[in-house]
Length: 315
Length: 274
Ligand SMILES: Cc1ncc(C[n+]2csc(CCOP(=O)(O)OP(=O)(O)O)c2C)c(N)n1
Ligand SMILES: [Mg+2]
Image 1 (cartoon, each protein chain N blue to C red):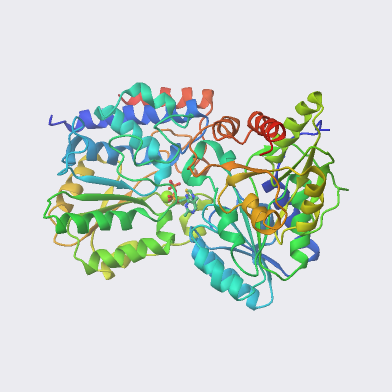
Image 2: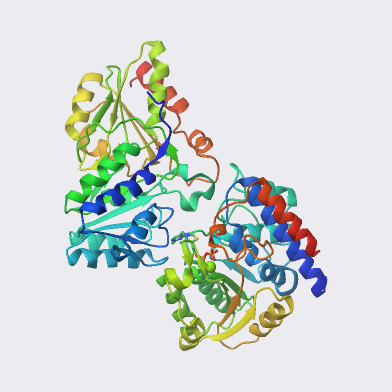
């Protein structure tokens, strides 16, 4: 299944926006001194008149983006996820969400997998602070191909969107033909003993755990919930009606993330035993991504252990 | 405190540069460029100018150093280690898991680190707060903020500059690392800062300039800054990557670690100066 080379979601963004720009002349890109790291450099070189470098100024970046959208442009604003939507949350809230600006906040370097740069650079709260904002769509693609499709899809709509991307390369789970629709979760693999819903490249850890558990005759249904807002309640509910057990997984704080959205919107009306896997109210630190996933209990080993626990002792 | 000669200080700065190369090479990541550029100023501060005691790192009357551009922490860690705050062996743990030497500084992981940083543009405000607190507590410590030219893109830096003037923070010195480089290129292309000296002056600050690689000039300028009746900005002209010819003034080395071969080449060059 994963014999292809690993690729990063930020690379997919860079390639997709570059390709889109050729036909969609309405697209402009704004950067805050991170054009190379967020992979919009290639766009900037080819289309200098549609690229705006605001310097290290994330608040200004979103204000300028809102203004560009008022002039009719489809605006992609890119920085790291800790700074945007971190530093510029009020600008996001009012100039973009309240105003329904056609701005796509595409941020890379989300999650612990930023690695050695450490806690200050590891966005673990960005889903929480974006999904509470009215009018904003929140999308966290699974892998390289899915990111490309997400970029194309969000360019077609006028809504403000937060697209959460990652720095490091990860396995390619989907291919160019896998369907992608905003707001529609995909069942990655069908199963009957437990439902695992997650988002982002960390889902590969769930796939590894589920693979291992097959030996013990445990079958896990894995749902790739790439759109956190609006949440695909139906797909999740249908799966829960079958398996009656839920685990959620994200490279994010448990508080306020995808799991918490599912508790609010699905489990609140259809109660099942549930375990939320994510970062447990702590900051990260420097280290290799795999070391950090292990230490902060979001790797396949921990997932496997939690699946076994909930299956053996559901209440 | 021992009174170091200019020659001794230059040699210490050179050792710190070697530490920076070894640390970033060993970690395989990190920011050598700005760190090398600030090695002379860090040496002057910790070995000559600051009122501090590495054996009593929490001494309440110590001068405070607030590093705002946290990505250059290799120079902070190496300086603290050379000064005796902790063992030089610890430098090998830079950016490793379970280490106090985080990729960007964490305030509570080691004595000697006064503030957490990494996200740019926050440090000068923290330094203002510390300076206000000193006045409120009737304490005499001096606050040295270290900021970068790239950070002057952030509005918050200018908010702090205004505030320092409002409260006449004559116990605040902001040393600006003017290397003309930020992450994606030269400052003049990414976001031109214009006449920083005139800008600071029009915000009510005293402005001094110095050659960030001339130890005598650095010490004289810092000494002069301590006697001002206004907040002081020291615009320190530095060279990113200073001391390693293939890194100098090349923004590729802002945030890239040297590989083993490059590190050896750099160390051979640096050792020639001692
Ligand atoms: C708020 C914020 N935005 C973006 C970044 C990413 N970043 C890290 S260093 C840097 C360049 C800053 O320029 P400067 O401090 O002058 O860099 P140097 O001279 O050390 O190369 C940027 C944009 C950051 N750390 N913080
Ligand atoms: Mg600079």
